[in-house]
Length: 197
View 1 (cartoon, helix red, strand yellow):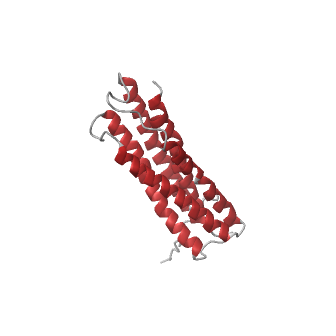
View 2: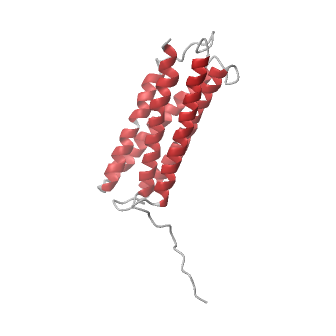
View 3: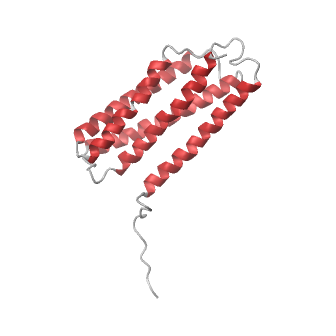
């Protein structure tokens, strides 16, 4: 009887590890979910005589705009950290990750505040259902990103990263840029377009 030796870890395919493939598939899948939801939003809008419905004010732009820039800007410190780790600059890695996390948390806090200020519920009409679903799903992705960000920061602070070993930081950066990128599509679709009649 011959013995078979199984690999201890999955090997990389064409330079990609299992974790990179996994995050890439999550990004593709979740990206399609947002494409479907935004398509449904615009379908409902096209089928309605008035959008938002009568009695519903379009979302205010006064606060969401600066908070949106804070979220989009949070990708810069992540990019900075991802670049710094390759050069062994761990202080910059820790600073970049912490700054990005704070910016994301501030945007999430604003989203919760915004939900509390809305004058309609998710069961009131199709507009409310679409708005709460899309913005709420984005917020859920942001919560996941912030949780992963804490793990990545813990690794950075405990010396688990080096120029040759930082895969979890890299896949986190992919996910974080995805969450920011989704808001690039959600913000004009739900907030800006509601003011264009």
